[in-house]
Image 1 (spheres, rainbow, N blue to C red):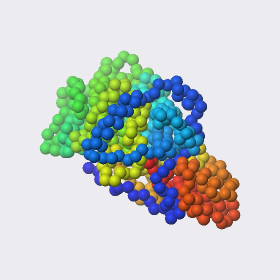
Image 2 (image 1 turned 135 degrees about the vertical axis):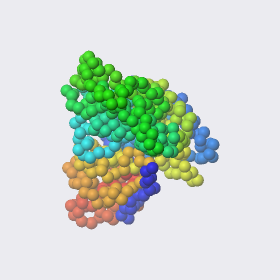
Image 3 (image 1 turned 90 degrees about the vertical axis):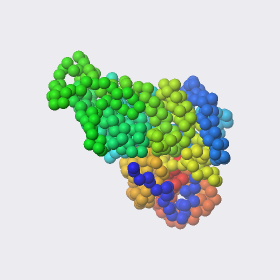
Image 4 (image 1 turned 30 degrees about the vertical axis):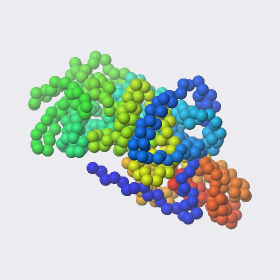
Length: 552
């Protein structure tokens, strides 16, 4: 079992900036007129009756445990929260004020619908699922994912709102029907002909369970996960080989081989049949021991696949997606739990990728209902995200109610650090109004800030040191992209107006009297160059403060 990280520790800031780390709100340009214009032409993603079902399940737990949940957050907080979760960035001042001025009774759902049909949602969920499916990587790995069209494929998934069961089948079969989808092979390809590594990635990514502990024996804690499930999943992928096709990287599949045995701790040996957890065993004739198989054309389909690779008549990967993945109960259940974790700070089962008998759901009936609703909606990702964003618990304040300690009750909004991509997009949005995906700041932050969906919110020593003395943020503040904000801040001699401008841009709220006086004292002396330098220091402290770095 892996050790769990320590509880959240937020780094200390200089005295002047401590008061900037309080929990409140912020900031980018308005959504395009085209997006707003088409909003009224679309049917709403979510029915109020469905939201009421979710709210009802949460309310039942609160009542059963005698919990009075936190009060509802204000409009500014909600706008910041939902922009970060659906668009991957803070809102602009104009976007936030537009939401606050909206008098419609359903304005929260209207904003959610708007964001879910925007390109920012596509880019943000591509960021999130690239990390959830592939893990963090070196700059070289990110470059390979880009050149291989993996990111392009994920963008298409969320832009076209492809059904999740279809996406699962596409990625695991790794046999694109059209060149524009060639990037889907990268999930298997990046794991470089290592079927055990592939199996250990497939199980949590698509089924929400971890099977690595069943490599040498049946799982010692979750005994429903058997050693045969581990080696059966390995067998489904052990005939695949990375190759180059006319469409670029591909994973071809042999028609022979892959027959072996695995040993238990007591020394007994068993054949690695094609089987998996909560799925039937796929029949496949096994050659007699010592028989050497020959790879013959007759074992393959007469015509090549469109990418130029041969396809076996008996394809193990095809059997897996057709007879194991299809209608497997964990496909919907695991995805629902993962999206709930993305939006709500933790899964209904926590950790989100350990959905076994040891980790019981906090709200079992709600998880069952959401999974079935997801299946009935034909695995509609956008609708699921919208449904979760519309629930009452999502709109609660992040202040923990007195006497309530269990985070699994969702009786308050669970604040959490921004992902590397959310943080960098928000920094760039706040100071320059645009996002540059190739900026060195993103490279630096990806390597140092908290991963997506950590089990606990923790600020590590590495993160604290990065935020206090790494050159990346300072280099960005020296970048030409931010001179506009610095020009605005130094052009006006009225420090009060300057303070109001910067707190609105970065935090989305009015400046406090303490902030006005502290900044006035910090900036009052020196020539224009000195004042500009001090504003850079002030921006650095604000951008690395807890208020900016956390979604709350």
